[in-house]
Structure formats: C-alpha cells, structure tokens
Length: 274
Image (cartoon, rainbow, N blue to C red):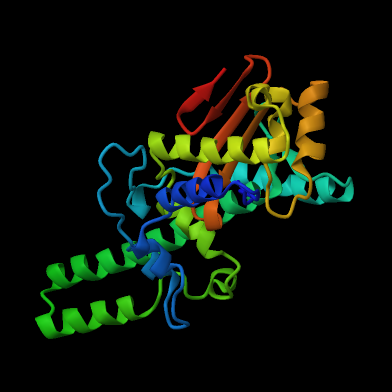
C-alpha cells in the first residue's frame, strides 16, 4: 500500500501523520539487514530474528517450516503470464478460484519462494549428511569440523544464477521471513492515514466502506492506476473477490487485503470492515 503524504495548511494534521508513520516503522534490526554489504549472502537474511512483540499477530516461522503454494500451482500461475501480458492485462486469473485475480508480482514471489525453500533444504540436508556420516564412521573431530566449515562456506543458493544476480529482491525475502508483523493498533494507524488522505483529496469518508470503491485507495507498484483497473472491475461485477498481498511503508510491511463484493466487506489483515 503506497501512502501519500497529507499536505495542507493544518500543521497539526501533518504532526499527527508523522506520529502515525513513526508507529508503523519496522524493527531497526531488519532495516539494517535490508541494507547489506556486497559480501552478504542471501542465507544471512534467513537468520534474522524479530524481537518479541507481545500482542502482535505476526509470528516467525523457521525457513524449513515455511508453508508455500505447491510447485504445481506456481507453474500454472507462471504459465498464465505471457498470454496475460499479450492481452494487455495487469493481473492473472487465480487457477483455482473463479473471478479472483492476482497481481503479476505475486506469481513471481510464489515461484521464487519455492526455489528459496528447496535450495535451503538441500543445503541443510548436505550439512546433516556430513554430521551423520562423521558420527557413523568415527571421523576425527578436526576432520569433521573442517568438512562442516567447507559446507558452510558455500552459500546454500550458490549455483543458482537468479538468486546470485539479485533477481530475488530483499523485499521478497522480508516477506518470506515475516508474513505479517503489524498488530491491530498499527492496522488502525494505517486506516487513519487512509482516512486522512481521503479527506485531503476531498473524498467522502463513507467511501472507504464501499467495496466497489475501495480500489481508489489501493495502489500496486508498477501497475499504474489501480482505481481504473480494479475499481472498474469490482463495480461491474467482473471481479467478485479480490485478494491482494500488499506491502506499505518503504515496501517492508506486508498486509493481506481482501475485497469480497458478494459479502459486502473488505478484510484488512485480521480486521474486517462491513
């Protein structure tokens, strides 16, 4: 979600907006990790641990336990891209759910997510094999540690050019590391920013409760006017249910947003507005 600044003569509103944005900044540890030195490997990102956040809906999953879509689903989604691009579309039809459209970038995120988990699983299996073999064959401690050090010295993604060349962005990695890490209070803060923007641009406050108009408040990087694209489809009924996996401030906060016209509601994170 791209949040535009509220500009006006009222200095108090600007101060309030600054306070809101301050509250929803990510942990400093992650911010520092997302500005790595050139020598830092992808595997370094997977060791980041978020500080405890009592009351937060965000939870941390070890990379080996990440639940991602099946490889088959990713292949199906990926096969839709060429036709969609040729037809001038900016999203693809969900392969299972009817009248549900997904932005292009979610297809790539899912595809690379599977690659990341597979590569790391193979690396961990190699390391475990060394340990088990050393125990069974009674390797000297020095030899065991030297072989383990050799395995660890090679990043688990080595040999996969797409990962080495930076085709998997740090924001994708951040999304794999932390599914959702904003709590209910911060969801409310984000809602306040949206309402402030709407007021600034002269939009009636009640508009946010209308699912067919919610497209006016959503933007997806690289997709141009979401109001024109999704808003029109929701209003005409072409799209009955729209699921957006989005990120907002500085592309680091991940928030799932669902718009269901049939049920007349939108679901933002775990908060539902009718």
